[in-house]
Length: 414
Image 1 (cartoon, rainbow, N blue to C red):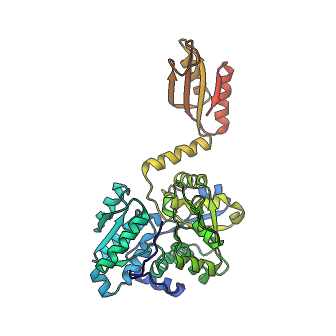
Image 2: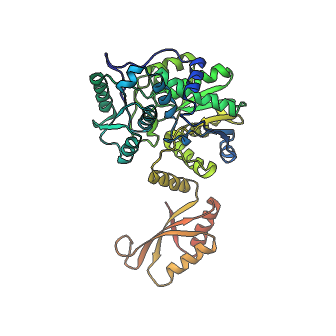
Image 3: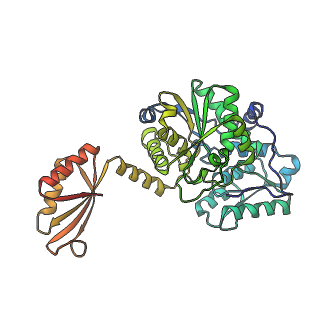
């Protein structure tokens, strides 16, 4: 994603961000954003092997932490800038955050979104009072158009992460986290452009110099890790954590993280899916991919966190219901709580009843059956049966397979 500011556009403020600026931001946005809780989760902690505290910023009005930075940046506008209005580019949470807080301040907001943006996100953004402009096939094209509009109409461009006012706003999370859980020994924050990590890391180091601070990216988009290591940026591919799928990180956050010596961990997609499922089942918390990335790092790198009090932010909960359902089902399959079996069976009366009886006797619950007689079977005297069975655990699944094999059925898992 390309979000560099061209010459002549409203440039992002590059003032240093420290504890003073973050505390000022906290006072400035008090009342316009929700002070979200930081809560321990026993279920998550047992799986992670650490005492895990969750900062629930998915409870914000727009479902994500982005409100903090947007609220602070808008509050910093001059009278002339407020009169002219603001503009932002986003296909997600930043769009709604800018739209909401501009509306609360009585400021006109324009949000440029790529043409592929789902209609639900467009409607939600418009619902906060913003004018939405659909332009370009990519985020980079939408960003370029947003800058053109800013120049043409004298609008202030509110960058999602490469802006000191935004960074200071995001850092207010740590003030709340350390107030609610003062014994935290490590903190983990998802990284997209780096604004949240930079603001939170600077705040944490100022308040608690000994606390360990980590960023986390997904393996398809490790742009910040690559920049910090002095490597060329190579990113791409599908990811469930699209909220942190960034190519061009912020230069202000990058400089801050270099100065602070922050390490960024890179996690696989599977760890993010596992974290989403664990949050939903264990903590009863709904998280989008980016929002679960912090927990994914705790699960994927136990050597950094085992036995420690660790805090991470559930920074967003805007996940599509279909995607959430698919993640939960995939996790059940991986955990062995859904058993998928293929059987070649004789095509005669009573066979299906016998199989169902054996599954039920072993305690399994058949949730889906596919019975192919005409084309999939190897013989006209046989049939192919596919079963999806709900089980307690792997041991019960093994018992069901053994019961079927005891009836001389050939069983294949998959």
